[in-house]
Image (cartoon, rainbow, N blue to C red; front, top):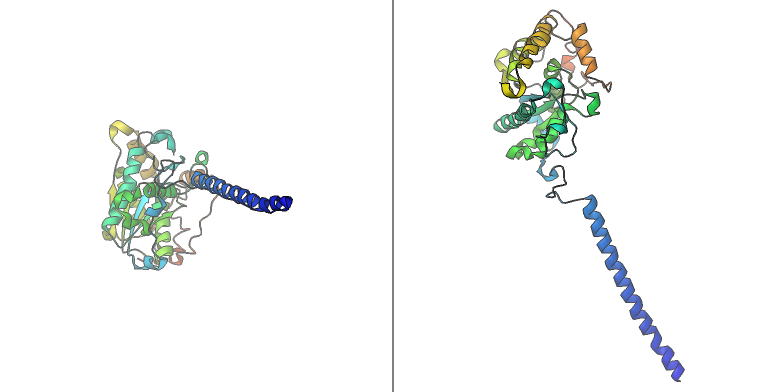
Length: 302
C-alpha cells in the first residue's frame, strides 16, 4: 500500500517539472526570436537604417495620368555608399577628378528638383542618368539621386514622393532630355505641356539652345533652373570644358552621333545596357535614331 501511495504521488511531480521546463523553453525561444528579429529588421528610427520606408507615399499608377508637366534633374554622379542618409560625405560618391568640389551642387540640384515638384502639384519629377561608371558598379545616377531624396525624406515635402521616378539610361545631357520625354510618355501616357531642366547654370545654353532645338520642343514651354558650384569649390576649369568639349561639339553634332560624342556615350555604358525606347514613346520612333547634322524636320507630338 505504501509503495502504491509513493507511486501514485510521482506522476504529478513529473508533470509539474515537465510543465516548468516547457514554459522555460518557450520563453527562451521567444527571447531568441526577438533578438533575431531586431537584428535583421532594425527600427526605422535606428541609426543603422539607410532610410525610412514609411516616408514613401505611393499613389496608384492611374494617378500619374493626371500630370501635365515634366521636371528633369540631370544626374552627374553615382552613389557608392551604403547609407543614403550621408550624401554629404565625398567618399560615398564616385566622382571624377574634375567633379571634385561639385558635390554640394549635386545635392542642391536634387533638393531644387523636389522643391519645384512640390510647388507644381501636376508635375512628374524624373531623376535622369544611367549606369555610367564602371568602378561604381551597376548603379545609376538617376537611382542614386532618387534614393538620396528618399533618405532626406523629400526635404519635408512628402507629397512629391508618389510622382518622383527615375530615367536610368541617359549617358549625356541630350539623352537626359530625350529619354526623359520618352519616360514621361511611358508613365503618364501623353507628353508634357511644360518642361523644366535642373542642372548647372553654365549648361543652360547647351540645354535651351541646342538640345531643346534638336528635339524640337517649343521654346516658350521650356524652362531652365541652373545652380553652379562656387568658384572656390570647383575652380574655373569646368567652364572652359563646357565651351571646348560640349557646346562646340554639340553645335556641329546636335544628336551626338559623331565619333567624339558617340565614343563618350560608349564609355559611359560600361555594363552594355540597352533602353526599350521607342516602345514606350512610339511618336518619337523617328527622332530617337536620327543623327542629323541638320535638325529633325519630321512630325513631333508637341
